[in-house]
Length: 476
Image 1 (tube, rainbow, N blue to C red):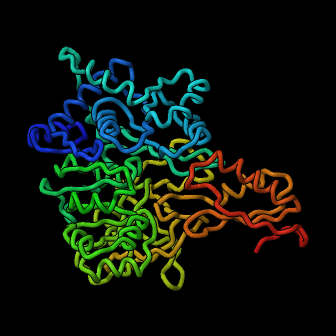
Image 2 (cartoon, rainbow, N blue to C red; image 1 turned 90 degrees about the horizontal axis):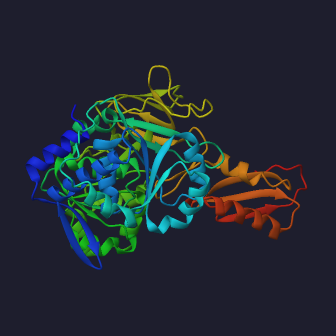
């Protein structure tokens, strides 16, 4: 199996002068060829190694950008272990994360400066780098030819650590090796062959395994061009302008396209060879609308613990009610199925992580045989089509594909002594809460506001319903 370093070197030899990564500056698109991208990756990697960051954990917290992509590929290809995290995280989330893994350096965008300034006082042993201020200099320094550079080629080496959602408990750290990351490529390529002729817009955050691996990392194998499109308010006009042939979406983006649909937009979507949709459940009516109107919409199902994709729709499959067909390189079975064949989805294969780094037994979902117990309920048919039926554990899955564990939010609410019972539930794809208390509404709202300040926006409780404590504190 080839490594990230091997694929980058091959891309340099094969496509040096071909456009690769496109970024937008004040309405004008600028293309960086494979030669420039990989030269910048090599130079940056040399500088990071000179700083003593070899084989260390290096965190990235930033909006999608050209700088993010070269950090991501450089760290994994030549330096150490990349830890990409959600740019919406607060200092509360970072404190949890930094307690789980030994982090040597953090690269952050200027937009996160206030949060990072606060953290630097708490973690003086970590090196902190503002991307806009430091990366140009690091790239210039690394262009010195006498600085030696070798790639990381061990398939068993952990090159990425990702985190599941966490609010009251330690976030679960998921190590992914090069073997994990590339295990699904051959199967994905056979089902949906991406090539050097393809063009892909990236609207979703690159720190997600779905986008970062299946959409971006695999582009160093296929050679397809990438357009970084971080402004979702411009999604429709940029689709019309770029006319991609490959697109990774989540249901939320599909809904936005549906609401903005015109004949011209529909024509652009029909030209997309593979329009993937994953990260959350897709409304069946919306899904059928796209398929019936000639859009090659392929629903995908996967998890971070399995390096993204577990099942993907087969192009041309007349059965559109399923959530994808299980990849041929994976063992997937239903544990303890009921009379309808519904049980917990379990996965085993080379894309599956070895297990959480924090070894938190309360949340460990990996068995001694290396199988991952997803916590999702579903059934399989005779053609390995997977039909999702919900969660074994209570969780809100937002339309943007983010996981929110309601038990954790309920524990935060119960941190107020005057709240006797709390229940968190989903309302319009966002958390809402009901509490039993005799406290004034203003006190409860102030408590919720304090909780929300600790949390990223997608986890924040949008509405709270208050019931008086008259029947012994139970919420139905």
